[in-house]
Amino acid sequence: MADCLTNLDPIELDEATEKELAAFGKAISHPARVRLLRILASGQCLGTDLVDQLDLAQSTISEHLRVLKQAGLVHAEVQHPRTCFSLKPEAMARMKELIGYIA
Image (cartoon, rainbow, N blue to C red; front, side):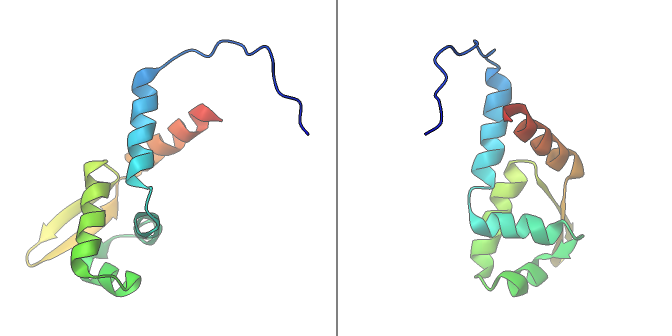
């Protein structure tokens, strides 16, 4: 059994950073959203192609994309009648930075 720490050094609270990371965590808390991010990491993709890739209902994928867009991780460009989705690299970099914050 590992030894537990008995004298912890105080950890500086940074509530804004913790809330920001928690919001990203909530956005990626579903396997389908993680899968969408992995697909989009390879490049832009039309919504119809995402439906084909995930084998989920279009409405379900739309809801997952809405959550990812709301978290600022995904960008949607309407090319009527289609929508092209892509990752927001700056948001992905920020999420990676914040994950490093807790390590």
